[in-house]
Picture 1: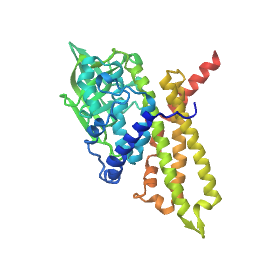
Picture 2: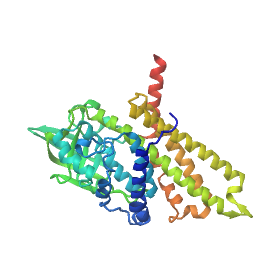
Picture 3: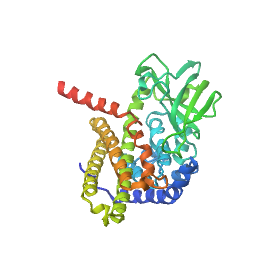
Picture 4: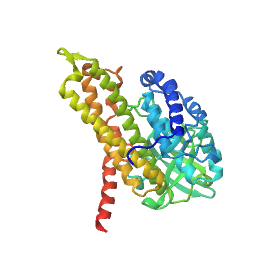
Amino acid sequence: MPFPDWTEEHQAFRETVRRFAEEEIRPNADKWDAEGNYPSDIFPKAGALGLLGVRMDPKWGGSGLDYWYTVILVEELVRGRDIGAVVGLMVQSEMATSVINAHGTDELCNEWLVPAIRGEKIAALGVTEPAGGSDVAALQTSAKLDGDDYIINGSKIFISNGARADFVTLAVRTGGSGPDGVSLIVCPTNSKGFSVGRRLEKVDQHSGDTVELFFDGIRIPRKNLIGQEGRGFRYIMGAFQGERLVLSTMMNSVCRDVMEETLNYIAQRKAFGQSIGSMQTWRHRMADHLTDLEASESLTYRAADQLVSGDPQGEVTVSMSKLYGAEMIRRIILDCAHAHGGYGFMRENYVARCTRGVQNWGIGAGTSEVMREIIAKRCMKKAAT
């Protein structure tokens, strides 16, 4: 399918999210970016509107909707122009909680998922390690069973929401080496032996907290295990599809916003007796970028459609979407900043600020190299049959 047939329900949800972004995020975005922090009360505000449980089971207070609503949520949150805050909200609503919703016990969901959907407890996802990066199967943080408890030792890095989280959906090694030794556990951050290390100074997304986490002999009840022991790697890989869809949508939405800003600017900005937008060089560049963006949005929407329908091709398509978006956003953002001339180098300029993060889009939720490998493996497997 090329583009979705949005219903009245989709449009109503879009308007709700748009108002939230325009009233709660955008007026504060410059301040939060300069101060390097957004307030945690944004979570209960979002929770009260049902924005933190879009795909979660209604049994736990979620809306039970599909990935199309996740796409709308991201598209409209990005209008707030603070990606740090948007990432924090999406970690809460999708990345750290979807595995609990899918595989957690009723007790686990009642204790952690219900308040997370309301925004009363803040969630983080603890997967990446200092020596691991995208190699999730090689993680080293250990969880040794001792009676009815797991004893956890290790560390995580680049953890969004880590400084403010009430709990971490934590990837640990409960078995031998490789993917079959990985499990997921809910780790409360008030546990003895848990500590937050450095708040890492990022090039972009300044308002969001990204930190190191340390686990020194933490004792966690066995009941906090998410799903089955040894299935954590599979759960993470399944959740990555949603995370990659979120990032693909973010990239498209940032580019759409930046393109609109730039087109308005070059239509008005005069140089050598004419508007920049009347110069063929810039007209053609903008035409190329708009074509690129339309292609990227179509690919992302196709990925969403396949994930909703359960099409096994969805994993490959969402990887293609993230890969394509990461290459596209670099071209569009840098060119649009260049079109602003000296203003495109000023921190007060939104387009200029977007240049800070172009590198990261090809890293989060699996690097572009990992995306290429996923795509290539599937292509070669089909070719061999």
